[in-house]
Image 1: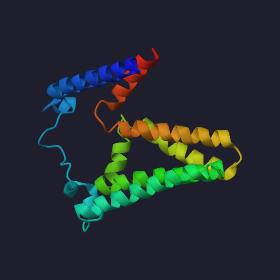
Image 2: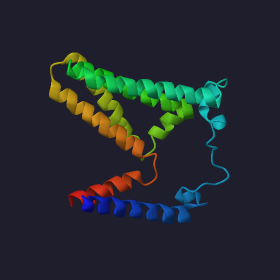
Image 3: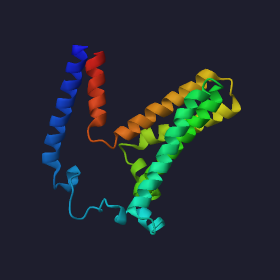
Length: 186
């Protein structure tokens, strides 16, 4: 157990150090991805969502995120009880929960910006895998509800793709997970 704690501590320290070094070199350099005065503001007023729903206040947007995320969590939680009933019912509830979670994030940045973020090179593959696995999960759950293994395979792929997609928004999180995996299994 102490070895695992040491591995986690080393990975965290390495990641923070790399982040700090990259931050120093990239700051103000548009070619390296640094921020400039010409970059789009990240506030909700400048987001495409403010044009779609201009009458929504920041508080209302947060309520929208909270409701969608809460319902998404509720559906995902209820799906665990549905697993005792049938794998197809579980898969459908779980997938609806994930769809609601993604819909909730659109309240913050807007649907178009969310889609633009999804097709960025760092997120495109995991976003495609996520959406294709959701479609495959629903199709298999409806067309072949007795195929437990295939349903569970698509649910697992869906979950891993969602986690990898979410990690893409946290600086160096993917690198930390990869380094942790290397140190743990190599």
